[in-house]
Image (tube, rainbow, N blue to C red; front, side, top):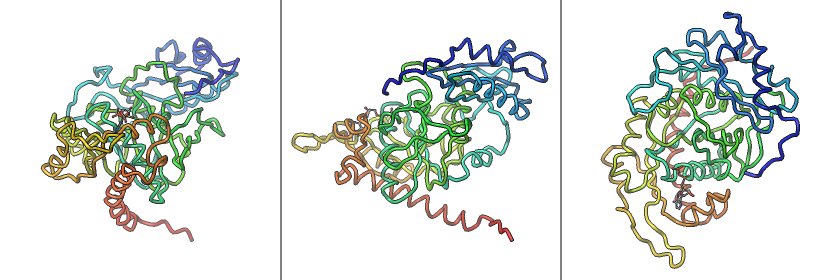
Length: 390
Ligand code: ADP
């Protein structure tokens, strides 16, 4: 990311904490800093993010406190944006989620509520369908697939958004060729960044690239909810969500909180055999999210010099596995330097070389994905009650 000159007056963490020390928790009568409620403060070039840890039971009531904390920081000179999230941790929960258990446990984000999917839907009411792109492990090309899928959906004439939920390794700013920071007109709602006609939001726009962040379960959910709720996404046909790799609790929780129309699983031929992709399938099945299909990435090697094709790994594994598991096989993408160079260079192949066979393959995947969603959307939208104002 291009280095921005920090505004001379950007406040330090100490100054931010001093401002927050004037915010009083009304029930406990002390300030939120001495009570140890302020967690994970990150400040860079005037962009500030932190979480306020609260009791799950009090969660929903503390929205005014969250706003007050944001206002207190916002009032500091040099502050360009403030993101405060309420997080709640149930007693006895492990601070980090590690296992791949079958249920989301331990954490809940405020406002806590049972109707998760319904509540989450309200976060982004203008989005007709949300698709998650997932993988059993990192480095299989999940983000590359998410970007090219989003661009291929755009090429179909759809209004598309891209949400980078891979908060541990956000790569969408680089792959979409976007630098800079989201702007906010009113200090509350951020404008999404945009390139190639796609609205895009990533934690990578808000936090410094080189700074490692230790995310705890509740913060992950808070950051994600904010990237949905506090971003002016507007009306979109489809939002593509690039999930963090893996099938642990963080992914599972996310799959439950975001009202997903379906999931696309990206796998390489070798790890479909190693069960990584199958774990992903099972995860989505557990939370009743339809699996739209599997993409086999790095399926075969396509030589840039002579065009010769080599099946480095046992190519075709994903297709066979998909058949066996009863999920659609969406297509195969070769291992090709052109795909790597374009996605890492911020000019994904679907826009930089739309006539290439790889771009055609991504567009075929987009057709197969949208084909499954469109029918369901239309019947759901027909069935939904209409509000008539007379
Ligand atoms: P993940 O999101 O699964 O961690 P990425 O999409 O970031 O994976 O891809 C990892 C690396 O592999 C990137 O450098 C990307 O450009 C490259 N890559 C992904 N898919 C392909 C492909 N089909 N051919 C060549 N390189 C690829």
